[in-house]
Image (cartoon, helix red, strand yellow):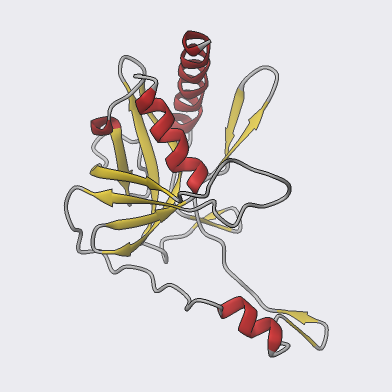
Length: 189
């Protein structure tokens, strides 16, 4: 079973590599490249013998800390446990085209998944959170995190929905959609 899973992941990542190299990558807002968010980067994995593939997005929240999704960090940890990759194969890039030749790849020294993340159960998972610790600090200005309870405060103050208006939020990142069968990754660049 482990061999089947490893083979499937290799095919999946190889497919993603072909698609990701065909289109330039970069932080995306509303489907358009957006250079205003230089602290949003691509989480990349280098599959030995296959190449580089983007597996998610992350936001720099400290000089060496990248906040990402727990499903991204759990996936990377699984690949390492399966022996498909090593920690040295995991990178973060803040370049507009992170999979291009010559892109700046930052090493990762730790992969942390929220201890209560256990996959998706229902529509959302409040523990779908992970942190990648970079091997070195970077000089990029980190994003400012909202304080704990921020959305609750907006809701309680009536600011999430006020007079028919809904509070606006900007979602920025890299992404891919998996279509099955067959395994086809479509990147949202």
